[in-house]
Amino acid sequence: MMLQHLILNKHTLLSVVLALAVGTFSHAKTGDETQPIDVSADRSEYDDKKGIQRLVGNVEIVQGSMKIKAQEIAIHLKDNRLARIEGDGNPIRFEQQNDLNETIVGEANAIDYNAADGTLVLSGNARLKQPRQELNSSRIVFNSRAQTVKADGGDQGRVSIRIQPPEPEQ
Image 1 (cartoon, rainbow, N blue to C red):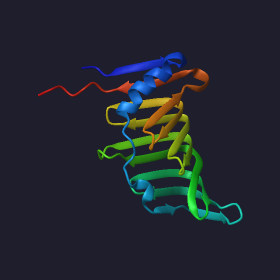
Image 2 (cartoon, rainbow, N blue to C red):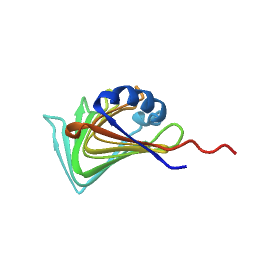
Image 3 (tube, rainbow, N blue to C red):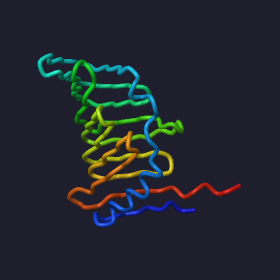
């Protein structure tokens, strides 16, 4: 069977994404957010007054099954705890396992992760992919706690979704 490729305009996006994405994009692995965060980079600068750790060059952040790779990242701390991760790159890559041990992969020109609400925003040539579905857009908002994915086509006004057909029954 051939793969189906859906192109949606802004007017039908909301209803289709809510119907498809919530059911097919599995949420992040339970317990990842309680794991320690390991960070490595070529260079690091910390501003104690602002609570911002700037990492530059071959940045890698790992928390449980979540991995972020970028050229530059800013980690915002509040009360010595992770509050937010933001960065720019060409592209920034994101990877995380879900509770089914499937890999969710994302990439974009910019990333903004809010630890307080579990929201990951991918913007600029954004892509979010897992087995059986791929979403391409100018901006994708993935909320692991609410198990929702929202996409915005930006100036082009288009979102691209590819859904794999079901496996044939044996």
